[in-house]
Length: 320
Image 1 (tube, rainbow, N blue to C red):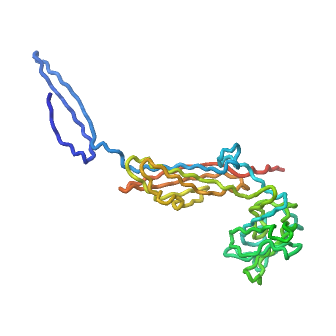
Image 2: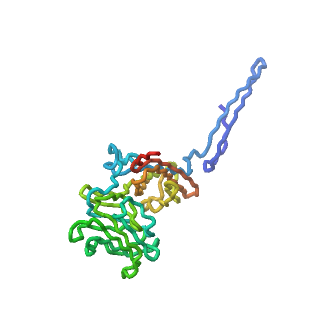
Image 3: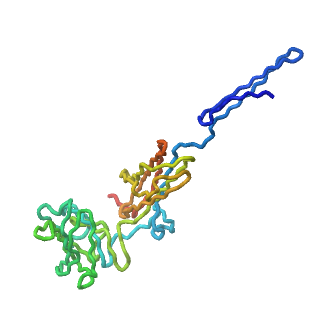
């Protein structure tokens, strides 16, 4: 046995190759040769590389889905027409003039008139909603910011129900000295009234009657599963976005407190609430993006894509 000793620094990562050649001369003078190779690396440590992954799913209330799957691809279509007298109506104040009105109520059921350019498109206004038949019946009276919702309740009236027609007054402020828009809307649901109908500066988004609560939107949950696949180092989430149909949203604030640093092998689940507009049949394309860094400065990123279609089926069209 022949041994040769050499020193190897176990603190420095390096690979070594050794070749051995032995020559021997036989008694008859014949020379034979033997070769061998050996390779090894030190130190044999686990990888310090950053490796954080993200996975995205969408779910909603199982009762709202076909077969109770809870999948956003199987949301049951909603009713959009108000056919029974409502007890509650919620409207969004969009601001703007009467020209943006979009509904199919007859001319004797809906009217709209602008004053001084109509309702503002930013800031706030004072809105008063009353019965056309008896203006002492006030359904709503208050300041509303553009883009916000306001609700009117039949229970707050002397009759306990909405009359057939309602006035929507839009004033510049609480003094009611400057009228900007006045519209008359048929609100008893005996005529055409649908979710998302626009009447001047206001738009119907929610109504409730004896059949239940009806809204344009279904609340769903985007579930992000973030996993540190690295073997030896923690990863701190430094970028986290969700982009749906080209619109990006920063999700860093949605990460639970003290969970932005993910240890090796650990998983963090982040839930984000989203609203799906059921009055529009459309495809949702969402890309989740995440970037993390390790204490030694290593950086890694990952993406996950999600596609689903939701919304009431489009009505058939008939060509001429």
